[in-house]
Length: 153
Image (cartoon, rainbow, N blue to C red):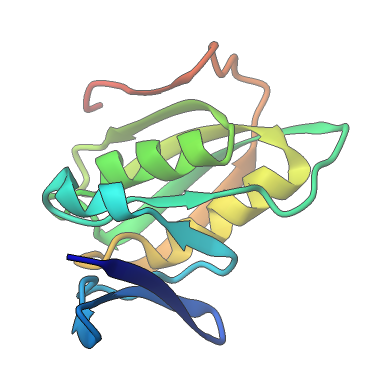
């Protein structure tokens, strides 16, 4: 069985389709809300959603750290795992956690471009989230050495 991968781009939306034995089969049922996205064939076996692998768009020598509070339907919709995956792809350090008030809080630290890209992604969130608001605060907190999940506060 031969297969070919086709990536289809619509402004700021991209999805992956496969062609098996000359018949088109849509393998990705979800649209991705970020641009310059490459989705790998191996990510189809990952379970709940496809994993997008991206490269930060440009780099900056300066580092930016900000704390972000995301409000809306952001708990129980895979938002924290999605945040960890996206922040790791962008090379960010920091953390994400649920808050008892129903929001999600995160600390992002890295290149200015990567932090800004992550902020834009958080405005949309994963497919099942409904983001109604986002607050961004500059921060001097220590982001640690990787991106991790923290306990609810």
